[in-house]
Length: 380
Ligand code: PLP
Image 1: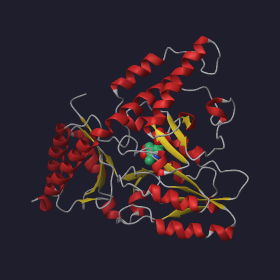
Image 2: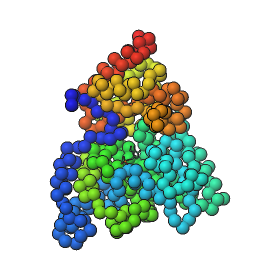
Image 3: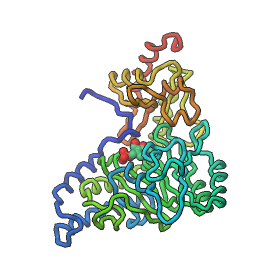
Image 4: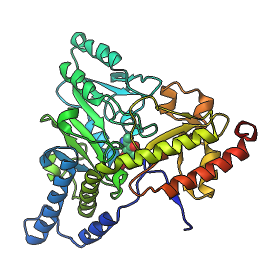
């Protein structure tokens, strides 16, 4: 491949070299981790070493980490309805589709919480909604992501957690995009469940975790063997888990470097404003992930920008979703009240551990050319 600049880390991050090496070294560990013999014990100890690393990334106890097939399964596991009590589920309107699907909650028992124009959940509305549960006799289950995948907006998770707990509820946060980009600490954030995915932090695809807090328990989604303390059956993905562990360790160490990523992102936004002064950076007024920029260009079509940038060697994604052949504005931007026409011109640029100034410069050269070509009068 000719030289390219990959600026789509929120879709997935490149596999880290150290992860690839550890993954390859773990593939020959063929023992079944549940076997008592030496082959099994070797695989088991590789898993437990990785579990400790993943736990350390979020300040959790290793025994509270449940490995799953990824963020989607971890969210589904969190949302597996609790038994023995009547539950009402609340989720923000900007959650990932794997949360919005609702797990085992019925549509009638699910309430979507609005977000502000900056894409932040409105906790006053949450508090008011939860007051109702005293009358209804049910318990609330609330899911609020730590940071949004499209805009990078950071949600008030610690405050939400307190509100939910004072209403005797359970609180889940999807931290897939926040991991490795902002510090995550189970004690400070207070969730009963937190979702992680390896491939967003330079780990392998197809492996993630649900991390439990406050002594919470889950109802297994996948039943069978007694793996993962009877919380997720199935012979473990040993190499994937080992790779996840190394990725988590590197992500924790790299938190010290996120300031440099934010500087590159801010430079990019400044240069974009010089080329397209009417472009709008969404969620710019609130706390955002240091690596994410969602830029809406009035009068442009996101697909045209994404394809034009791709041809110029730059990978970004669009803020709109293509379903059944029709390009629709994303549910995130719609929930924020971004006008449909503007949302159609939104692209997401997301940086990561391997991003260099050269990548930003390549993006800006291509963006400048595209804007001049697509909107000669505005750019002039
Ligand atoms: N949650 C968020 C916020 C995500 O961005 C993603 C992936 O795009 C997921 C969950 C799903 O994770 P996975 O791809 O590991 O299933």
